[in-house]
Image 1 (spheres, helix red, strand yellow):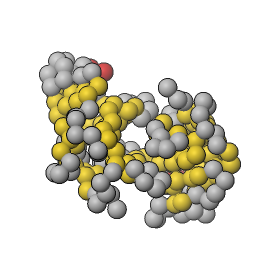
Image 2 (cartoon, rainbow over the protein chains, first blue to last red):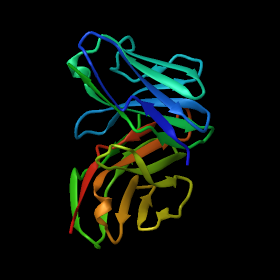
Image 3 (cartoon, each protein chain N blue to C red):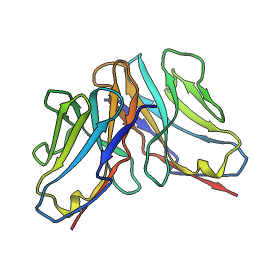
Length: 115
Length: 115
């Protein structure tokens, strides 16, 4: 099946710094990618939807200036957490959709710890 | 906006027995998809089963089957011959057939398999 790779799988950063998480579709072109955040023992919360070459669409309540999403190519989307704070510590998962109606594939997720 | 509700935060079943996980959803759309995802401790999202709303026949995948009641907006997952490896969080998800086709997840059900 199709593969979506997320990197890094775990990252620790200092408070106030920025950190970037990459999401790559390895064997297909993803016209749309999605970024989720998952708090402990909770469900996946959609943060934003990104389409290649256009601005991301953020869900209500998600700070677009804090969580910068770039979908520069059909195989790569990045999430940058700017000026990270300890409350940004979480598990972040991306997913990518093939064509239409398409199938959605998930990355392995990334653990972010802000100290 | 669409919503997905899983009313069972936790379920347990004896190994080799059958268990049913409940899911209801709310939508005004007629064309959509429903999914069950499994999330083991690794946090990788694994697609268990998928149902197209236009299909009356319930989807089955080996030991996994669904009971799709479109009028009642109900989508339960039945796991037969439960195995220790089935222990995980299970998420019910809705996806519109139009627009961005983002996944909307329920709160999740933690399934424990008792040996």
